[in-house]
Length: 163
Length: 163
Length: 163
Image (tube, rainbow over all chains, first blue to last red; front, side, top):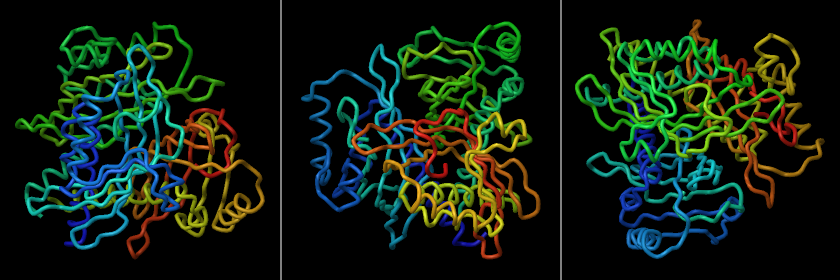
């Protein structure tokens, strides 16, 4: 096995673990852990496909930096009023698009289902994550940027949690 | 590549293969092979999220040990009356939560779709597997425990096959 | 790590990358790239489960060789009339069924969602890919045969793009 293979495996495994930990955190309702998946200057966006593909700025959710990420958690946990629900992410394997020094550009398809009490599970949204991932010196991966690009502008019941 | 990396890869690959073989067996209608994915004292449960998370015992399906697993296969294959249907599992990559000697604790998100004859495919259930996996001396992995924790208490058409 | 482990990892990683690149190409609307995932004599079929499992020939889509694959792209891009839509594939990890020299037989479960403008995303189809994959001397994997076996004969809105 070449050095190239080893790095390639490590990256794929690392990204997979990051994706599953991220999804598990949201699906378990552990929203407080969500900002930790980002670097200090990390950006999170949830944006419709048409806007993203045309480079337009409109986004359903935009958090630029750790403070805004923490802020969003507070808003969802303490201020917003909505029916309780749980999420379930089922994501594909990540596709690595480019490697730029320690920065990995990756794309991952997602399906997100949600369940409200006493209701059957329904499809909330499908789309792709467009990610920029940094590996810190300890080997831990974090999102410098994660854009959840959803395919349909129509999202049932509106977006409460990040995708 | 360190020894740690190698073990980590092997575990992830092993769990992934186990998950896909398990799903493929159910999706192919090969129910007779299902008990073989468990150890002799293996436990399978299908349980709603609310009950699992509160540690409550109520479960839609519970098989404690190989005999009950075999029994369940007989019940489904020869006794129960239901419209024929096929399943389709689409599962995420496994997330390893803890390693305790030769026992791996893992969690994997699943979506399960079902198709009845002359009907379009519909979503049956989404949730997560909470697994305890043992590797025997030959390197084969088996479930000591698999709990399929489904997010919605409402399951269309009731549960016939294991999830 | 044994040589066997290394080959096994490489195959799984290679198939995963192939599956994600294939799905991403269709989901991005880059249909022109689709024939490139096949060998010169590659075969693509989209076929209902009942027909596939009984070895019957009827298929919703059949392209035998590169010329027919290219042809299909032309038909979809320039001749067919249909409402615009986007696809989203969420696929499981591949399951390797057999290795026959340089030919890999693999099976992968898929869910495909589609989104029409101003409509919510809907489930299009679920099923499994039955694949024969060849690795060329440069290490690139291509489909000698990919059969998308869908579970329901009823596909909403009919099939426009390959699955």
